[in-house]
Length: 461
Image 1 (cartoon, rainbow, N blue to C red):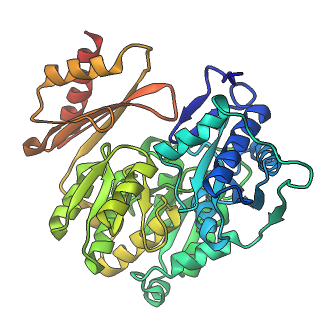
Image 2: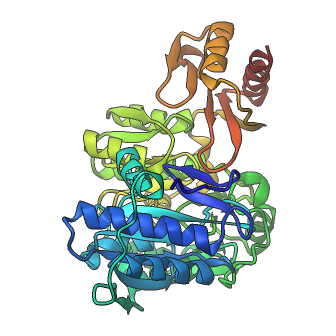
Image 3: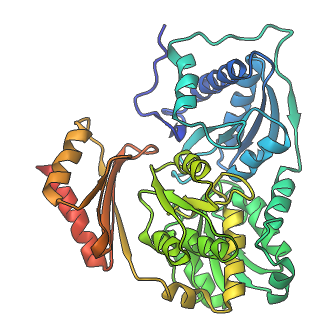
């Protein structure tokens, strides 16, 4: 019998997510967790798999974590519960626990009424498309093999996952820990009452920073919109100005993304997090840089200035991570503030991002705003439309004909590029919300907005 999913449930390479009590219930969560466990058992040849389980601070997190744990036990998986932890901490724990995968209970940047499950493999990375497809077979086409009374999984609790992750970040070879401690940066920090509050303050204090924090209580009652984009960081901007901080840092609820506020008290845009981190790494080690199709050209410019290869991958952390593996990239990530450093792991990590940015400011010896002012100016505009049930491929073809760009990339939706003019526009269906995203960039905001308007008009034809 087919398993009927609620129509508003979002299922994609980014996991499964929905509004709590509506599309997402303990029953739905348990079904997906059991399917994941069955997939793992098959992948490891039938032996008892070991699964790390972590969650962010959302109020529904403990409830769903209990459902996940029970479901995994029911299919014969051992569970290592690490409790409240950033998503990168949970994925980092896979290696230390010699686990076969992990489940993270988090809806990342979605509003507080949402929650989700993200599924990872033994590589310490999220499932790719092929792995996710095999897991989803157990939702519909194949029965879930449940364990008998004497084959149920066991549960262990770990208290030190955040500490292990912290030590790995402090071991990044590009960091001058003594120099950072002597510099004693003043950092304004906003963790949105999310999982980052159990890691970022500890990290910054170990780096000798004076931390002026807001929203550091990890109770899941987010005081602002969760996505750490510039328009949501007004409180942090004021804190930087009033405290005289050297820099402001903001995370999303599961702390895999980091956005920055310059020393002048203005958000500088989440795309600059990866650009600054890449500039630091490339000062020490040359190698390819990978990002996604929706990331600012500022990252491409950093790679060009260093004379290293640059590649764009489809949107989605796993797509970037796979491309990084193929290219042997020294750094990569996404323009949403997600930095991936293979020296630690192939996962977006706000703690890694914070450390690399501080090290760059230390080495350059200039305030953050002066460093950012050295980059070629771009303006990025992000828009979204309700996703209709129509043929997106036909819409993309119409748009490509209408705008006539010299370069078109169809890896993920449609990205039209005018490299000589320094502008591009990218349209794609979101994997986390029922919307069509439109992102455009150009040397001026007016030019970027014109691209968005042109895309909207072409889609309306």
